[in-house]
Length: 308
Image (cartoon, rainbow, N blue to C red; front, side):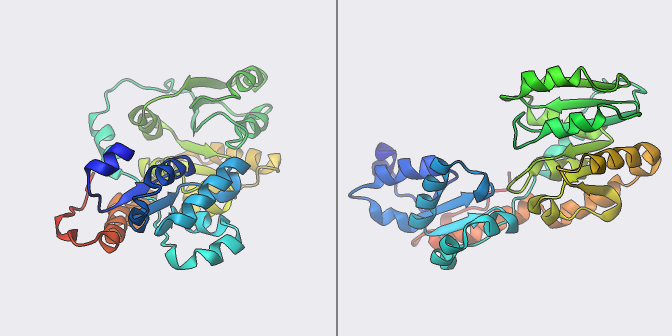
């Protein structure tokens, strides 16, 4: 970083974590601290989800950055009030957008091979790291004695994989549970395009891109009733919010999908239009472009809007 900073005159330095923020601060000290006037920090999660160490690093990054961009209202509101008041003038909320072109490209190039078993019943997909925050265990507990048939695919890896795989052997034999591990974004989208339902019972998020991608792909969604999910506000007939502490709500949501599978599969177009209108990548990049122009010194005319 010290070498890069000495070799180039940067208009904007954009950091995305407390760790890189600390590295940047050390690299600028002592002779290049004036470059802090050009630093943008994006908070991509909710503050309360951070470990104590990461809270300290993120707080440091927010204090020395010129602009702080939470990725949504929930992310902004998660910042402790006393910190938020101190940095209020530098906060510019920029809602995360998703790349609908990527979904469209995967859809256009998708081969005829099916990822789910043909005629398996309800096709369920769950995307995310396998950990306590993503809370996959609540889903497995809900389907343990559920009298429906279907296929549930977990995409992601993590510390809880072994325990989740073990528990999955106890669920209703009519529901096949598969763990595909960590996969590419394109593969995850391919599953979403085939799935009937995306389920996220996460205890906390920033602005969940996978949920936006799933809605655009035409999935019905069952989502935990946390602020980031509520912020997305999917259309009423395309989503059910559930409490992660109420197993019965999750069971009822799955039973609803089972009984109304035909209508569930027919609502994809409406929800696709909704997220495209409200959470486009173009809108997000346009807002960042404005921030960059505001921070850059004199050569803003040389900045080009990034489109992909």
